Length: 113
Length: 114
Image 1: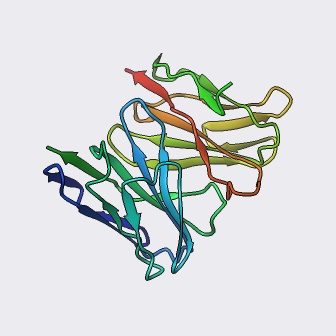
Image 2 (image 1 turned 90 degrees about the vertical axis):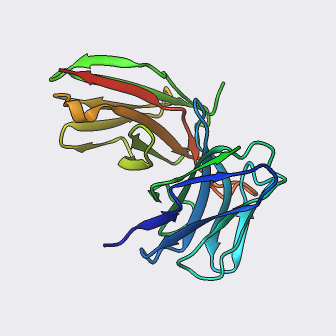
């Protein structure tokens, strides 16, 4: 079955530690995205990638980093520089960047203690 | 005016009722529109895409009113399983530097009661 797999689903970390969230897709989509969702807030774009070896900052990229070495994979690192990292992180993909039909993974819920 | 605005609700309706939500958008040149459904603590899932005047899929109808800059979602014969948050998403016109990043509404909460 085609889809997007995010791992881990739940993650607890101490303040000051870097954390990497995995996102893998087998939909053969070119574009991939990372969003963050906080209670009572809309989805906010962290980073997106239109093609392998290319990525762009979204609206709230500070304290995050990504890589896109393979078409299937778009991992997100939450660094210690991110002031308020506790959130629900969603990875998505679409056939091309610029469309609105996104497929989401099940999300990763990060809690920083 | 916010770029995308939705009534947060909650809308509480009995099973079998018809319910409609509106979503207003500020950029009149926006090209396409989408409704996503998000269950509690789950990922959003695409419900409908709207590229012209509207779209219909079973019990769900989305309509676009460009003159008044809103899109609506109508759900007929509500089921208990329709209880969720409905997110309105607008695809803005392509401009230098925006790379057509989607604009997400905060969502409208629907509770269908037995």
